[in-house]
Amino acid sequence: MDANGQARAARHAPGGSGQGRDLFASLRSGPFGGPTPAVAVLLVLMPFALPSSTMATEILIFATATLACNLLLGYGGLLSFGQAIFFGSGAYLSSLTMMRLGAGLLPALLVAVVAGAVSAALVGALSVRRTGIYFVMMTLAFNQTAYFIAYTLSDWTGGDNGLLDVPRPPLALFGVTLADLSSATAYYVFTAVIFLLIFIAVRRVIASPFGSTLIAVRENEARALALGYDTRNFKIAAFAVSGAMTSLSGALYAMLLNFAPLENIQLSMSENIVIMTVIGGTGSLLGSLLGAGAWVIVSDMLAEIWPRWLILTGGALILIVLFLRGGLWGGVESLMRRFGGGVPYAADGASDAAGPPAQPVE
Image (cartoon, rainbow, N blue to C red; front, side):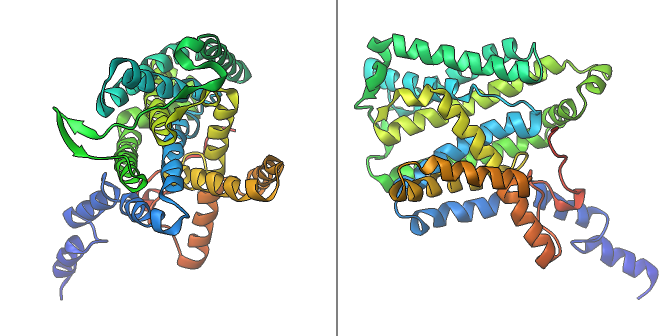
């Protein structure tokens, strides 16, 4: 075969140049490529591999909240200890919408998403005026304020007792019941579909110009400002998207438990979400699922062994920070590179051919 024939073959080969290579790359990095099929397989296997569908549902709910935190911390470089504000508000508002107004499932979830986006935009607008430790303290202060408000408004939130008898209505659209979610398996399937859609949406956000600009702001805000970007508005927008996702996860959690406890809006919930993000790996969407899964499974196992199991999880977190700076997904990537010669996609779901993702600012 002559040189022209070889060139034509290379263009049509998956790894070659030209349109064939572009098509193959788009399939790998598109919304349904990259890690998305692997996540879909995991979602199918989780109810069978775990002790119960309820535990699998809990993992996906916290993985959704961890995805939201990762968008801020891993891609925006914003360490927020205010995530429980949105998690708790989503649980309360969705529950009250169903209990006081008699609304169905989808309207309640919509209220949670909108309320989470609006409250997160307000918190973000005030918090991003400061940077570094002052930003962190601002988010912490807002979290404590929200907690005391929820504690004081006991007629609405139930105070220490929380909201009891939170319903789990069927999935209905225009008065037509599509699915009965009363069983644990049915509710898991519903939660898994939501998680997969959110996972795909977050991948699209990160791959969009908005996501690229957010990473640029994280890496060098002064340079982004010099290029003409309004970095403050980008941070607020990231807060809004993250708050909407976190509030949705809080609403799903209240329906899972049939209960909206005050602990949902405590600072400890924000800490848990941040810890799950760090354990899985900041800047890694798959790491969000790994971190939430590890936290829920290990905490459930250790709680049966020792009442002070948080000491052990604290020690595990220290070891991960010291020796696995990329989190659990970073460790998986290292093993795949050592024994397999590479990874099929980078931590953020992009093609590995583009190189590893930039690490968050320390």
